[in-house]
Length: 168
Image 1 (tube, helix red, strand yellow):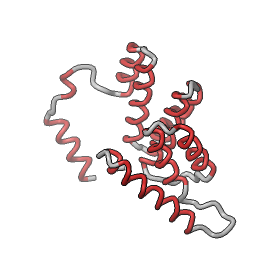
Image 2: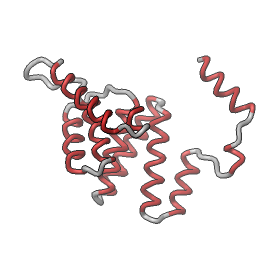
Image 3: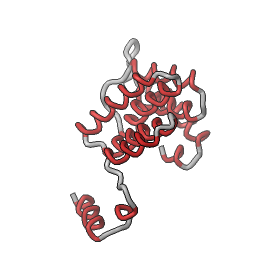
Image 4: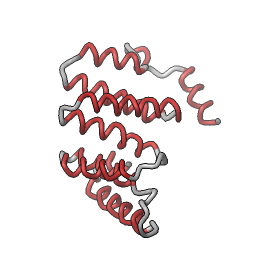
């Protein structure tokens, strides 16, 4: 994920292809590789970011076929937010909303804050793409984003809260 965030997509793509190959090699003949879903979903998300929608769809479908409920947060983001984005691009808003709802439920159950914010971001992004600024603002408020500049300034309470979370 860090390679994608720093723009080194060609390097990330190579590592993800290696991860797919490794996951396939680690599997017994005739069985679905248990870890294959993670690199496939991340690779699909990368393809989607490069506007390679057909390949992204194919990889997401392969990832879903072997999904087993395990994975790190970036995988869950790719699985729910990436697939929702693809559905939205293709004009399938109901599927996009369903995926975001499922991802939101998972984020709440497993307390995955990063997934929560990725879903909130995607909902807001989709509303803005449709030109619905009012809904985007309401979604931001509902997600817990501050409504004014005051909530963005550091305070001693925020620092104490973050430090206490780090100690736990």
